[in-house]
Amino acid sequence: MTVQQSDLKLDGNAIGGLLREIFAMEMTTAVGTCASCGAVRMVGEVVVYLNAPGAVVRCPSCDAVLMRIVHGRGKYWLDLTGVRCLEFSA
Amino acid sequence: MSFISRGFRGKRRDVAAAGRVPPGQYVVDDFPVLSAGPTPRIPVAEWNFVVEGEIDEPKKWTWDEFRKLPTEQVTKDIHCVTKWTKLDTAWAGVSVDTILEGVEMAAEYVVAFSYGGYTTNLPLEDVTGGKAWVAFEFDGQPLHPEHGGPARLLVPHLYFWKSAKWVRGLRLVNENQPGFWESNGYNMYGDPWREQRYWGD
Amino acid sequence: MSSRGPRLLEWQLGTVAELVQETPRVASLVLDVPDWQGHLAGQHVDVRLTADDGYQAQRSYSIASAPEDPRLAITVERLDDGEVSPYLVGEVRKGDKVELRGPIGGYFVWRATDDRPLLLVAGGSGIVPLMAMLRHRAAAHSATPTRLLYSSRSLDDVIYRAELERLGSAGDGLAVSHTLTRNQPPGWTGYARRIDRAMLAEVTWPKEQMPITYICGPTPMVEGAASLLVDMAYYPATIKTERFGATGG
Image (cartoon, rainbow over all chains, first blue to last red; front, top):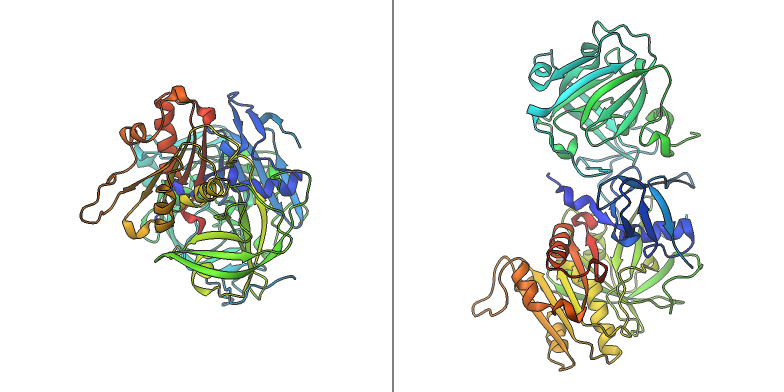
């Protein structure tokens, strides 16, 4: 059973629901600046790996981890340190 | 519990072999691929494995040198924190005891680190005494990159996120340093039998 | 009808009103969802299935219906080794209830009030959100110049084939192009290869006309098409992408 690596690579649209749970607003149009390389992208465009113990969001330009989101036992653990700045509005 | 979807069963999950299946787990017969990033592609000609950190002299092996070390065939049950358990998985690898042979081990912990940047932390005593391997074959075949090849750490008695894919070394450290998942909600230790999935479990 | 706002996303139950077999492996579920707040073309819903032992599986599915439609439709491709899709396409019956939440997504949406020339590029089941856009376009009586380039393996795999033919001959500025990558019927006059630069150049508008593009399908196809358009000097900000993993099922 060979799973193509590309099968596991999604984008920010795939965590639209999860981010709605956390931020209580639509976040796929939020704009983030990668803390590693400075690339500026909408969340809908960033790379997302969901098939993992948590969601790992990566910069499409440099692959650095932008966010990690773990959800379990009724809690969320959110690491946004890979995003220098996240811009969004209601 | 809320709504039940009429007729939905989901993937085949056996509640068989009680006593072999930790709490909250179900048995699968495929081998799910989980990924936190792009799959590293490391040609064996470029592969190295190191032991470094609190050690007098760091050790390093090329692939050829590594493959000359004594290899063991082991069959183990593995348990992923995402709830699947796979029974009787067959591996070939070098025991971490062999890798650490001759190393003065004053350090109490290790950090396993991988190509691609993944890390995970373990107490030294959980990777010694016949409990851990650096595995390069699964089911008689060279370990596929999707499953961590050329080589991955194999520590079956803990949740499988501790069995770092694409492992390239062990760093001996004095303090327990949380790795990739341990620093983001996952349990520092990860014993499936005590269901230690998250912080505070 | 809003796509955002500080409203909590709650799970709702929809009742299957109709099942439409689109192709041998693809079916649409048309749902009655009481209190559905409306959606925008391109958004999706999360569907959650619960087995009687409490086991749950969740997947996202693009909404296929136009915002103007009274019922909510999703279109699902059955993946043989999938977990959720064989249930939705195969087990679900009229009258069954399906748990869903949405609409979700603000990035990959198109409104008929946008009159910029529109290019839609679909690979396989990536046609679904783009179909919602085309249905919305028709319902809104838009005459925005629009081209759809739709890649499928064979003619039998083309989802919404008859409806696309009808929409494409309505004379309201929509042109539909198909490419069949694996096999073509005798006498086929459409494209017969994977999407490449030449094909995109024939289908889209000159960049001076500032077209906007939506690309949806499997990750390699989406990334390939987007890269080609960027290489052709189309502004990246005018290209929106949605990747469907093959493991979506």
